[in-house]
Length: 419
Image (cartoon, rainbow, N blue to C red; front, top):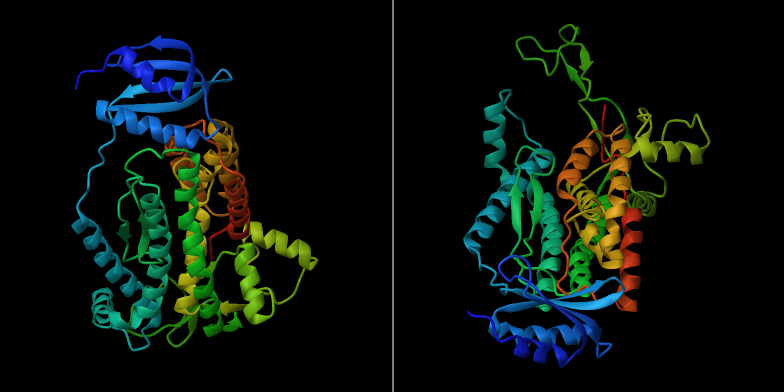
C-alpha cells in the first residue's frame, strides 16, 4: 500500500499532539516520520488507541516515545498480523506432558514390587500410571493456572498470545520442564505489559498455596537419614560398595532435600508447628543456623526431623519454585516484565547485579550457573511497549511492588540439596 500524503499523516497526528518539530525518515529502513512536541491530553493511553486506529487503514503503526525530555510520536510502516498457530501442537504437547507427569507421579506413589531391571520397572509403572494422578492433577493445575493467567490477560488487553506450550520431561524430577506462552506482538503500553506479566505468577500461586497446604497436611514428619540398601547375592548393587551379602550400605548423592523459601518455611510451620527441617541439635544460635541453612543448604541435617513430602505437597512445592524462577527480574521472564513496567529502560543496569548474584548462589547450587548463562545471552531483550509515554497508574504500581515482595517470599536460594 502506498503511503498517504504527508499532509494526511500530520493532520491525523495534530488532532491529539502539538507538533513542534517534524523529521522525515526512510520508510524502507527505520521510520516514516518523527513528530516531537506534546500530547494535547493527559490520557496518553486513549490518545495512542485513537491514533493507532486512525493509522491502521494505511498500514502504519505509531510509537509513543520520550526523547531528550520531550514527547515524540514515531510512525513506522506495517501493522501486526499475528499468525493464528496450530492448536493441535498445544494439545499434543499437553497430552504428552500429562502422561509424563503421571509417570513421575507413579514412581513416587506406586507401592508394589518392582522388577530389578530398568525396562521392567518402566513397564510396570506405565501399567500403573493412574496411581500418579494426585501429583499430576496438582502440578498441572498449578501450571495451567499460571499460563492461562497470562493468556486471559493478553486476551483482555487484545494482545495476541498463544495457547500454552507444555514441555514433557518424563525422566526428570517433575515430569515436565514447565510451560510457556508466546506473546505474538508487542504490548500496547506498560500497563498491558504488567498485567500480562503478573497474572501468571499470581494465578499459579493462588492454586499452589492451597495445594501445598493440603499436601503438607497429608505428609508425615520423620528422621532424615541416608537411604540404605541390603547387599544381596546375584542382584546388582545400586552403587559400588564394600558390604558383604546381608549387610546394609548407602550411596552418595542418592537422597535429595527440597529447598526452602520464606513462604515454604512459613507453611510448614503453619501445618507442622515447627521450622523444618529441624536439626538434631543446633551448633549455632537458631537464627545463625537458619540464615546459613537458608542460603547454603548446609549442613545437611542428618538425624534431624523433616517433612516427608506427599506427592501433592511435592507438586505444591514445585509450584512455589516455578513462581520464583519466573519472577527472576530479567529479560522475558515475568519478573523482567514487572521490572521493565516499573523502571523502563533503566532495568538494563540491574542485569550485571542479577548475574553476579546468580554466580554467587552457584557456589551452593550449580544450576544457577546455567541460569546465569541463559540470562546473559537471552535476558537483555525486553518486551518494549509500543507506547512508552503511558506510565503505570497508582494501583498498578502498588501491585508491581506487591509482586516484588512475593519474589522475596518465594526466593529459594538452594532449590535442591543432594546427599
